[in-house]
Image 1 (tube, one colour):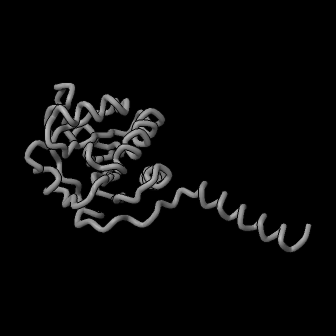
Image 2 (cartoon, one colour):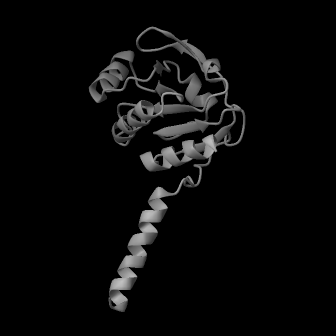
Length: 167
């Protein structure tokens, strides 16, 4: 094999190894990073009660989204796959839509089955300092925000952040 072939092999191996790495990408700037996650409760779109206290001792993901956010339409199905693959992780979506009808239409259209709360007044978005969407908060078992995924988050990045909190 020539030097060009070895170079391609080395680059390919490096890409493959980085894809398998459990080191998450850098956290998106947010004042809650490495702080205790603010708790909240409310009714889901299915009208069942939800309380972040139910995550006590379990990793948790809090996902902010809106139907007018094009990236959200990719990250929500990715989070649904993570939800299906990890039944011990508590996941809750927080819709910042203009109406509960828009939130339901998006969630149902994308096949999202994890609990989703409609943040009618934007109180939760303010509490979590959400400026752009999508935003994903990965919370460790101890209740601290261990990673914040901003608008450029990927499914692999969220999975790596979860893996890091499980270690």
